[in-house]
Image: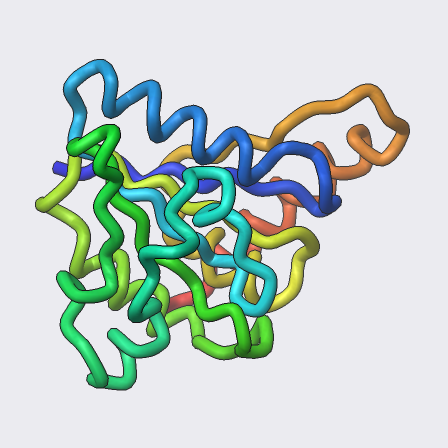
Length: 167
């Protein structure tokens, strides 16, 4: 069974994408099959950190619209064959997909990968809600700033509210 991990924080610039990329690479180096999913529609960066930005042809949005198959949107890392990326659309709004659609995407990955790591966008709006709905394990990157304490309260309580809502 695939393990789903959401990397999240209410604040931008705290290392969510870096944590996603590094955790994905570390697990892949340990022999696990890993899919990293960029859930930051409109502001994707995971492809840049992984050095895969020039290899993107299709994104999650095209998979959902039926323009391509999941296999066509997945970008394989030539340096690490156990790691793949499902990129977000760069030119779409943050609410480009609904939580049910995010669940569909992840369901397509479940069973094919040992770990599915979701790079959540900053904030607690639609993008966060999409990712939080899927969460089995969460990680909130920590930094030494006052707002981190706030994240530790707001993010878990918001995630609990979302998790309690039916799909």
